Length: 300
Ligand SMILES: C[C@@](CO)(OP(=O)(O)O)[C@H](O)COP(=O)(O)OP(=O)(O)OC[C@H]1O[C@@H](n2ccc(N)nc2=O)[C@H](O)[C@@H]1O
Ligand SMILES: Nc1ncnc2c1ncn2[C@@H]1O[C@H](COP(=O)(O)OP(=O)(O)O)[C@@H](O)[C@H]1O
Image (cartoon, rainbow, N blue to C red; front, side, top):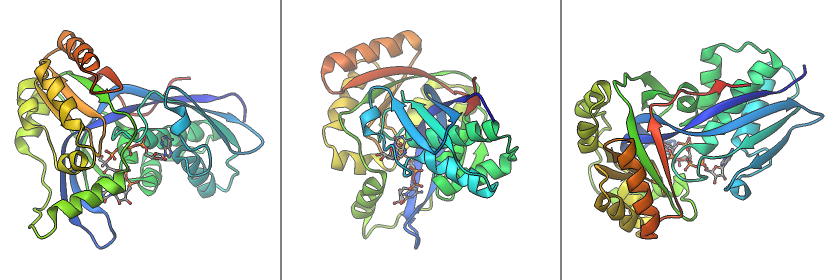
């Protein structure tokens, strides 16, 4: 066992996030239409005397460097199944906003899993890798597969989706994160006493993805967690308005937030919206990215 393996893993945006009522296990059934976007973390694993994690990048100080890190949990889970010690140095080059509703931790979990599988020669099947991903978190299987997919159950049961074109996005990064369980709890509070419908994917939205129709996708974007994220962070309404005023076709909170996502007509428009968002002072950073993006990929 020698050398290192590096895996590149994309962020995601949820183009539709339909949320059902809370289940007895505390999770919510979802119709979660994931789209991988071209913002990436890179996870590098190198043999070491013991499990160790380091992280670089603008948000590195917000990433846990102990065994709660999803990348560490992935290495431990794979090693445990194959009767080996998870003695690796995991380095995360983090470009995905932390606690931003873009599945950065999930990306690192999927990336570390694929990287350790290659480093250790464990030869895990795709099914085994996906099963470990689902144990790590609801979003982790999608980080492995990328592209676009419908996630049902708590989001971990994936059906790949066809995407017929390139979509151009701007992501406005907020100051500070939002906790995913806290946002789901706020959803429960806001929907208390109402009949929460069973979550279902929108055929119109799936068709817009399949045909690569940006205007139709803009009309169909939907996030049931958005009212909860806005209730917890009312200032996000200003960011959403600033992006649409700058020419975005549509705006929504990405997953549990607080990152906000703006769908643009084309790459030039995306750059203009990003500049206007930054100038508006309603976000910490504005990032441009195209979709779909490939899932976790060994790059070195
Ligand atoms: C909301 C979504 C949308 O894709 O992601 P983010 O926007 O936060 O990235 C996901 O459902 C988040 O997935 P993930 O971040 O993997 O969550 P998990 O670790 O599985 O669960 C964390 C907590 O979120 C809540 N949770 C998560 C998924 C789900 N279907 N129902 C839930 O109620 C539960 O309180 C759970 O304890
Ligand atoms: N590798 C990791 N990168 C980022 N956060 C991680 C990681 N492992 C565990 N976490 C924890 O997961 C929380 C959620 O982070 P993240 O996955 O970036 O956001 P989100 O769930 O909103 O997409 C963080 O606050 C952090 O405590």
